[in-house]
Image (cartoon, rainbow, N blue to C red; front, side):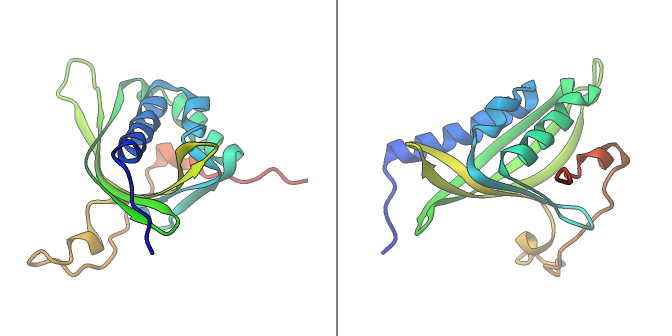
Length: 171
């Protein structure tokens, strides 16, 4: 039997979604990592090869990488149309995400148009991300639209993201 979610559960999950983007966009690395379960996973599945970060050390690398980019000072994630459903593991959600980059006095650039697929678990009394998949607004999600095949559309990873790949320290 799938558990139910209370209104408080739903609000707490939405709050975690908001804390994630506020932390990432303001360089709050500890706040970003705290949005995830201890074994939490972040997968960015938009490029030719999906990137994966699991656990606090890898997630910290992800947040520190973006904090170190000068262009991050103008970045804002906009998350909307969040659907939350209970599941055996806790809760699943899907949300639209658009990332805008401030460029001087404008016009500003819409850098990402995609969506999140999330799995939330309660850990230490808080709803946290067990897994977040970041996907482009293309491919399978659009298979019901005329002219779309539903096949995954992968794009080359932009050069400014080269240092984003996490490689655990040897030894």
